[in-house]
Image 1 (cartoon, rainbow, N blue to C red):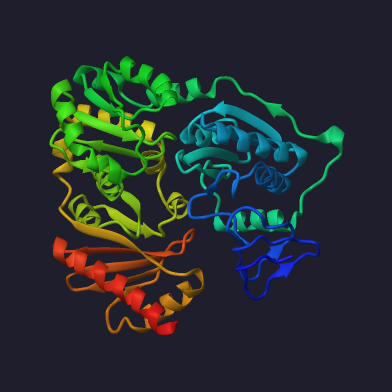
Image 2 (cartoon, rainbow, N blue to C red):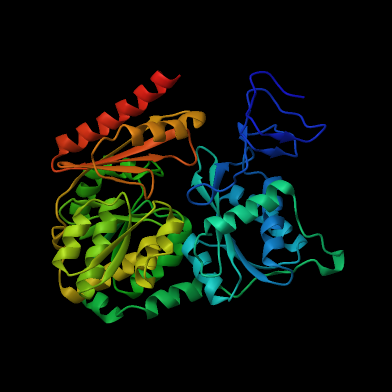
Length: 478
């Protein structure tokens, strides 16, 4: 049964007795073996750019979690240990329990960490010598969106090859079915969170931080992070004031920037030297220095690259292709090397050194490392930020139907002319006054456009030019 306003693209295979509710899209080449009731589309892919995302009880359901666990467990092998963690969101716990059921059904030994943040799950994979791990977390609680991250034996995001293997097993329901007496066990390791924070404390010069006596403003701390991270900050003699106004949580760096005036006034009242923010799963760190500069996203990448270059001349950093050209100026200044990667976290993880991995994907470690660095060098965060060359980067997104994405990219390449292009990820076109990068969004019907120029006006004009190009190509071809 196929409902009204449903699109079934070419090359699909649909098993008998399947029901497809109205207004759905079945992507080309899909093998549909269960009714499509919830969600808006069916396809051959689970993984996006950074794990498996979706709305809880639409795309991320208990049934889906159990199938994912069975698929990954079947590939890992009977008797092998896998780490499983999740944040404190009730929906995360529901999906996590379903994944655990799927894993043990394939004979996997589940090392259940309980409620933890993502860096703890990554670290536990290597600390407990597991074959991999899964972490379930909230993305936007108001929108009921969550994410499932799957790790390899290094605690890294899976490679594309491994993602495809899991997707094939998932959609074909090619699971190992073992005897009931051989079902895997669920084991709860000792307090892994305490061990993790002890490891951070042991990795830095605590006396340098203590002697400096940092005064910090902590923006929007989650209950888990407050309970577990605050003791370490106090141990380091940091005076910390928390900032959680009635507005509640923020869901983007843009919202954080909008609160700058209030944050800076609070810093002045509390005499704080910096204000820091980390997401509820402690993957991304952002901070305001004492001069009001917001260090986040691309600026944060430049900041940690500066620290790594200063630590040892001739150092190497890996950065996404979206990183501003200021990184090349820093590399030239400190005789360093820059290696650009695709924008996905998995691509970056494959190229970074261990220290850069922690600074890029562990907000808790990053903050302590930055404090130690500033204390040892006797510089403020603002003085370090001022060492980063100025740049003008813009980014916007433009709608593009799924079916048009390939065609739009081909037309852009054809119409580039004599300008130098890079095809590492999307299409990056170089101009005398800057560059523009057009990236297809792997999870949504959009294109992302990044542009950098020698002035804000040039960056804006390059971005707007490619937004118009994408819109015009779609109008012309349709």
